[in-house]
Length: 470
Image (cartoon, rainbow, N blue to C red):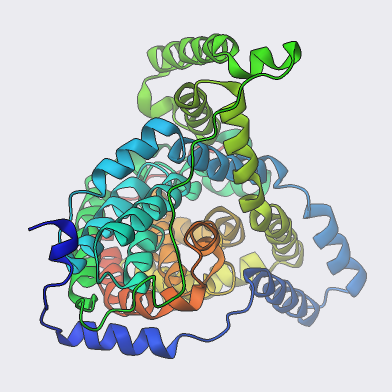
C-alpha cells in the first residue's frame, strides 16, 4: 500500500473525532490580535494601581521607567525565534523533513506522527519546532490523501501547548538561571535558580512523558477519517515545492557571500568557545539563554554553509519577531506598575491566604493558565508573575524550582487557544488561527485537568530550598 493509497481507506470516526470536528467548525471566527490582550492587561493593572491610591503621574512614571528594562531579554527571545527558524529551514534539515514525511501511511497516522515530532522537537526549541513541524505538515499534506488540514496543522502546533516550556527553550527556567537577565527586584526574592532544580528533575520528566503521550493520543483519536476530512484542496491551499535558488556571485565583491570560508571561521570560533565553556562549567551549569541562542546560531551558520543562504533565512525569520518586540516592553511596564504600586505584595498575601504548602502549586497553576489568556508570553508573563508567586512560595516553604515548573506547565495551556504563538506556523502553512482553534481547544479541555493534578501531586515530593540571595 502506498502513501497515497493509504489515505483513501475509510476509517471509523470516534466520539473525539466528532467533537473535534464540531469545535473546529464552531471556532471558524475572528480572533483579536495578541497585542490587544497585552494592552488590556496594561489597563487592568493601571486601574488596580490607581484604586490602591497611586496617582496617574506615579502610575505613568512606574510604567515608563520600567518599559525598557526587558530589552536584553526581549532580544534573547527574538533570537530564539530567529535561531530556530534559521536551523529549521537549512537545506540538510529540509531534506530530513522530506524523508520523515515518507513514514506515515494513513491520515490519522500522519496527524499523530506530526504531533509527536512537533512535541519532541519543542523540547529542543519552540521556535525550531514551529517551523520544523510546520514544514513536515506541509509535506505530509502533499503526500497523503484525505489528511484534514486543520487537524494536521494543529498537530504541528502541539509542542507550544504541551511541553515546550518544560524543555531547553523554557524562557522562565533559563531566565532564572541567568543572573544578568533577572530584574534586580526579582533577584532579591528568588536568587538564581539552577536548571538542576527545574528542568533536570525527575518530576519534570514525568510531566513530559505523560503530556506527550496524552497529546499524541488526542491528536490521533480526534482526527477525522479521509471520508470526512477537509483537505488542503478544499481550503484552496497549494503546497508547492520551493525551487532551489542557485545564485552565483555577479561581482567580485559578492564572492565571499557565496564562499563558506567566513562561515567556517566563525563556526570554529563558536565551537572553541562552547567547548571551553562546557569543559569549565559542565553542560548544565553553562546552559543559559545566551549560550542556548549562540549554539543555535552557530549550528544554523554551519548547515546553511554560505553567508548568502544564512542571511536569506534570517531575513525571513526577522518579521516573525514583531510580536515579541512590541509586546515585551508592555510586560516590563506592567512589572513596573505592579512593583511600584505594591500590588505584588498584595497578590502574594492573597495567594498565601487561600493556599497551603500543599495546595499552592495547584492554585498558581490555575491562576497562571487563566492569566495566560491575556498575557500570551512565556518569559514576559513570568516577569509579571514571578515576584508575588515566588514570594508566596517563600512564605509557605514551597520549592522555588517547582514553582517555576508550575508556571511552565500551566502557562503553556492557554497557547492552545491564543493565536499569538501560532503566527510563524500560520505564515508558513497559509491557514488561519480559527482553522486550528477547534482541535487545539479539544487538547486544552483534556490536558488541563491532567496538568493541574500533576502539579499538585508531584509538588508534594519536593522539599523547600532557601534561595541564595545576592
